[in-house]
Length: 370
Image (cartoon, rainbow, N blue to C red; front, top):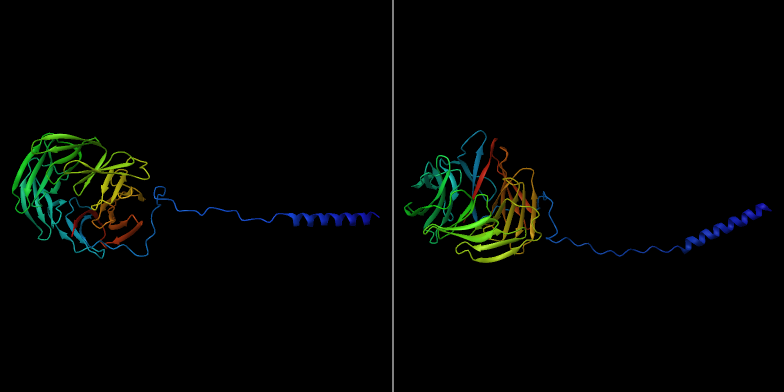
């Protein structure tokens, strides 16, 4: 009898289990929003970026002079031109110390002891020399073409036996080196940075100061520009990082405001360097002791972050005359013998293997528009 009861109970349990399984709800898919890519204001690209399928081409609308450094030498005087195929021409020996390119020419300013010179790169010779008493060569002279492009303005550092002296100012005719105007900037000696306008006026920031001042050499008037911040100049425009989010653009000829650009996202750190491309469409900020190991590049059209680049070693950045392009090179290693092309808007990088000899590196780049 107990055996029959057990069989009945077993049948009831099996039936209940089957019934419970039949009544379990059918699982339904959970609706999820389609993920969207973060905006440029939110995104911070993680580098290095993968090599693009199609490599970037060296811009054809400019000339690039490369200074070659050699292991164990104190004065590097070897130079080569970067070709559009990404290689270097045969090296040339230039004896003078080259410091500043003259736009729209094949010439550069060089210096010797208390003398400033114009050097012709094609002819490999000094065209003219002008006296620069007490010239102090640790600071590259500031150079720009005048409004007629027939002469150049030069501001150069001067030093006495111990202290810096007021800076020298020259207006020199480009064709023959005749000094058209000359004076001493009596109220300007030790500066943080400076920029010349095409009228010869000199914008500068005093040492350890964010204030921007304008010095008129012809009447020695000194004017505070009423703006402060990190400053750079390009194409007779001044760009001031007024705070972590705002870049102000001024006309270097008269100091008038042209526009104000809001950066998105705002800078999280304090940059030590600011640089603007020649076509005025991008701005770069450098962080860390120069050469900088962290660069951020923003669009000056939209204010959006285009690229956030970190490097173990410091790299130098040079804006191209080709819209959207930048050159980078590294100088901290004697074996750094490469130049890299950047296109921040597409986050593309192309490494140019210059096939240099052992112990040769890159010392500096200068660019001329074609």
